[in-house]
Length: 109
Image 1 (cartoon, helix red, strand yellow):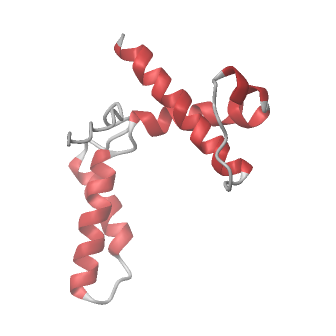
Image 2 (cartoon, rainbow, N blue to C red; image 1 turned 30 degrees about the horizontal axis):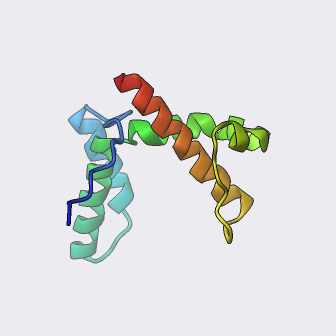
């Protein structure tokens, strides 16, 4: 059995590099939580998310989504096979990530 290959997400797209901004973002997320342990957990998660930022794959998918939604023909041109049981929106999102993966592949070529 082989280990799963990690998905190339392109790395961070918009990380917060300023420590004060990351702290402020995390404080805002945990401000109104009464329980100290839960407040600390919320702070840690919010700060980690702020520092990491969205992935480049997520950014590419977001940029591709309007084109995917604008025409059903995009599925045909990408050899995208809609999955039965999913809504059109869910299939559009999957198609956008397929475009994002192609963009990451082209970027590394």
